[in-house]
Length: 150
View 1 (spheres, rainbow, N blue to C red):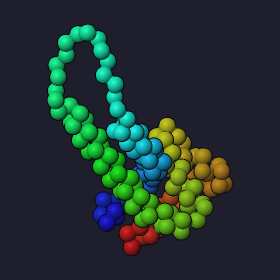
View 2 (tube, helix red, strand yellow):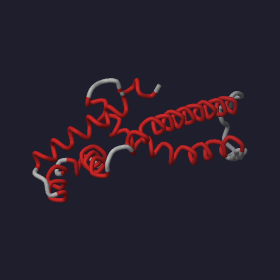
View 3 (cartoon, rainbow, N blue to C red):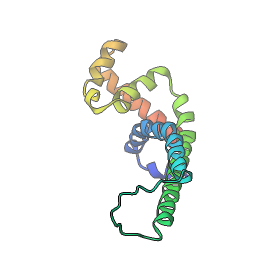
């Protein structure tokens, strides 16, 4: 089960939140990559005639095909794991309030460049003190942790 990857306290919940964007990117991009790899496998490659002798590997075609099949297996497994993650994470995420989602997104889903100012941005946006934002963040993490891991 996907949850076993994240078994540990608050750090596990934070790791799961941070994985969201990567998993979404895998789900978005992998079908296109699989189509590209599959298209290369079925379209024949023309030999260029240069007049120069070349080293010939009689198994080169087979090796390329096996390599591409292995790549397809890796891509399909990666997509399967991403879909399992989403099936596990999204229902828990959807049970958070908009404010909790906003707070966790600001602290853990935005790029590192913007994370540093999350407390101040949220304090001014929500009209709370930074200390209260920290409490809300801790509560949101705890709630998500309970939803994810029970």
